[in-house]
Figure 1: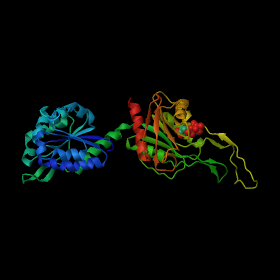
Figure 2: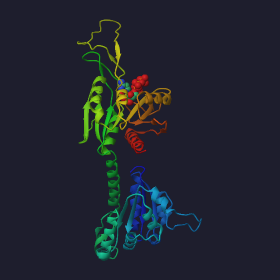
Figure 3: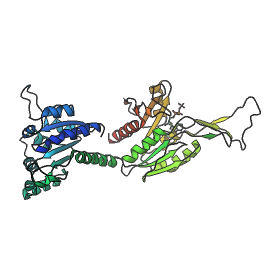
Figure 4: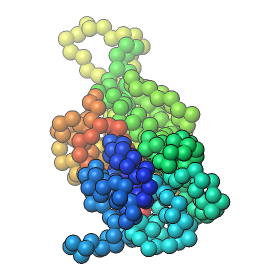
Length: 401
Ligand code: CTP
């Protein structure tokens, strides 16, 4: 839920006290939280508790009597990635079902640009009343998600259906909503990813290779899979492992083998993210037998490997998007720009070995992403998992532009 904006609407029921726990779990999972209250709900939970836990001011009235500032319900609607009304009393339910807007929370509901979830909470007779059922049906018809009530002891002393779902359950429903949204992002799309090093044989036991661990490419493949893509992962030798129903893993050793795999699949893919550290050169001939150390000096003649990314860039159609990597030791931006143009890329991920914690073998990376309209975005040092998420999110943003 990292970076997700959760707007909590709290109406006047005893279960309001539980929202403090919900805010804590949401904050722990990385969400940003803002709260708006109906005037009645501040009798059940103090706005100070909510603002302290959420680290944001709490909205109750349309305007603040002390300093005259205006709480803009439209802004709340634009800010939120999800609106969760919990607890939802029978009174507020009825007002939501009828489009009433006589408080900030209700006006915000009407301005909402995104999904609204509600967690009803009321006494069992109120919950069982046909009016309540009818109002809930109206909300469902309007696209609101209902987090079912639970059965148990109620504030009235009675026992039955009507308790608000526990904060952990509400948190899970919110998480499920964001997961489903993510899964839909790349659904039905095939993405070609290259990862790891290539090994270029010298003789039957030796090769020219590099220190690439494949971690970055595998994290990217994982991220794409979690967002619903079918991934074709062409991977050089690595310790990394990945299994998924939507994954086609093609293990290769050499640049020529990687090129062949890419040539076979690129046509059928919508996007390509090429993170492999392909050896630029390979021995001109591979000795049949193990080379003996007879001489003091040994020369191996090398010839250039095909540039796989450039091949994909040269052959890409107008609806395919291609992302390359550039690992530079100097003039990062200048060289990155040249590579982006030369290889006909849409995006290029720039990193330099000079940044501490970036590059081969380590679990972190520090990147910038340059697009073919010259927009550059720089990121902090992060885990490769988070970097993969940034790269895929950036691609998604680029696609939706
Ligand atoms: N790449 C590739 N095939 C190659 C070499 C590189 O597909 N034979 C891809 C890499 O996967 C990466 C990008 O090209 O996405 C950048 O590779 P890099 O080695 O940094 O660039 P080069 O074009 O090889 O330039 P130079 O070695 O001169 O820096």
